[in-house]
Length: 530
Image 1 (cartoon, one colour):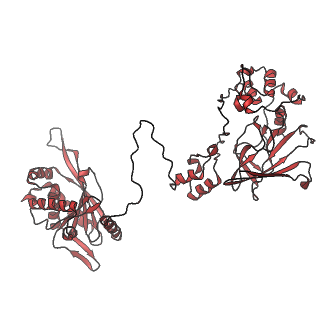
Image 2 (cartoon, rainbow, N blue to C red):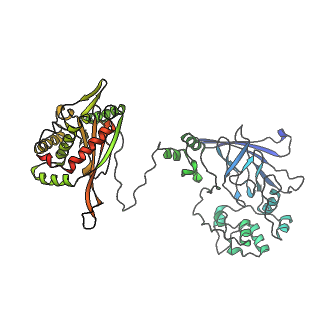
Image 3 (cartoon, helix red, strand yellow):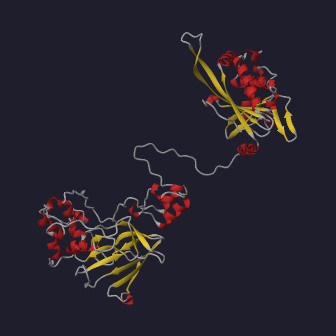
């Protein structure tokens, strides 16, 4: 619903011109239009002596000193009706539509899109009769800020100075579109100019409503221009416009939200009226609102339904989360090394038929290296370094809904066959959820093996209370020089391991020597099965 009120305040300002102030209230926005409308026809200087209206830059707020034309919804030569929006103005507070106060024709646009004009400065001239457009264009050049028009054709002055006969009112869109029998739909001025300029009006493409040929179309044709043909709309549609370069059409709320979120409006695609950026467009860009999901095209595969919303932690997941947070208080460092795996892989292939797994064989190798570097098996205490007598290797296992670390106790003392059987039992209990606390809380050193997933290298987070954790990646093949090979090169397998240590009691040299010892054991693994 719309309420409007207009009043004339010309006598208050001591002038003959009528000053109209119009207020309009629409849902979700407030509009105020102020027009300095000239209807008294005696002017000094070069003012034309016929009826026309001058549209000035309105004061859209009490603090507004100047305004920028965001876009023109009507072009020169277009007909306008009272109450029809003809341009969008950006003030210091908001973007607002400006309406025409009377019927007429846009004769001259003085302030173009993206340009700024002071409040009260002329921005356009509206002719009451279409035949007066050329004269008003010439007059517009004498106004402040108006562009200088191109030199008119030789016959144009005669057309401007000759008093035209009664000009019929512009036909309604329905009558314009209803051209039958090949009749050319053109304005009277356009037909007259075409005759004077020798332009075949039947070959001119109209840019007016319903494809109507305007005077500007004839001038473009005479100058050699070929405007793109506009398809006649099947039904009346809302006016469209393309903003000038550098002009971004957006609602006031969208501008405020973009400024708060520090977003560039130019990077947001507008979905509002006339392509304006709306508040919802900004909320979608910030992630505050989800975009409307497009439906799949006929015959296309249905989209995969992804999980959505909060899923509460299980008891195990909450414990893992709390343990990870606790690690933030520990200062750590990391050291990585590549280890040749050919000998180790060959040993594994020989014991695999006996039920020995890679995890059991790897735990045995790490435990034997810890024997020579007991500091790696230690843990921090506020009073000093706590050395663990037993070497208990905890190995991370991913299970449904979490992570757990079954422990191979006394891994340095037991043979690999026993370790292999014990490990299969522990994994089975872990998956069934039947591990006892001693079977997953008694570790003194941790191994996290992701080699079976093809991971080439990764860092592991040191669990609270541990001195070290070894991250084991996958085995990869490399070509290296070899003087004894036929072609001087051979293929070897390497694995990258990364040791994370508590730097409060373990130092870099300790980690480096441990990794060197582990490399020596892996390259000569035969003692592991004795």
